[in-house]
Length: 137
Ligand code: DQA
Image (cartoon, rainbow, N blue to C red; front, side, top):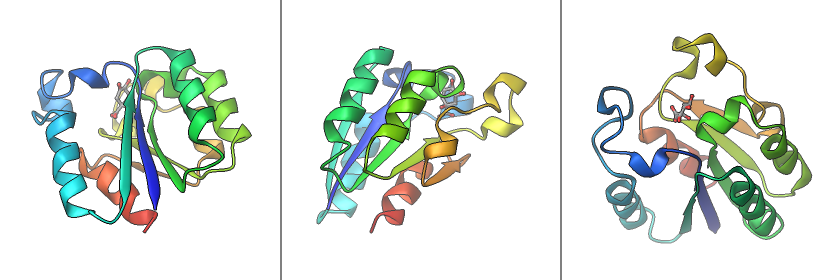
């Protein structure tokens, strides 16, 4: 199986960004653990702070990969373009968030990804990503 994790803006700062909300593990450390645990699965990774680059990547992988695990971060709540990209492709997308966005500010309750995602996993810290991987196995 071929999966990709796509992370949006500011998620490159995981480990040092608001650790009370997002934890103190870096994404590289987490990814290393998860790749060891799920050796039979190819787990690619892409992060960008740029909306168009996220759309390009979704289009690139969206007709050949078995699954996309997408944390569009702040763009979740603003990007019609990323929402349209998710709708346009064939590969199933699981939307993930580290924090429970419904327990936070009102503007984080809106998602342009959810209507076209296969499912949504949020609030479990970095484990949200692992649960999404398991959903594709
Ligand atoms: C986030 C939640 C978003 O509201 C926020 O903008 C992020 C991270 C999460 O994983 O909890 O950057 O997607």
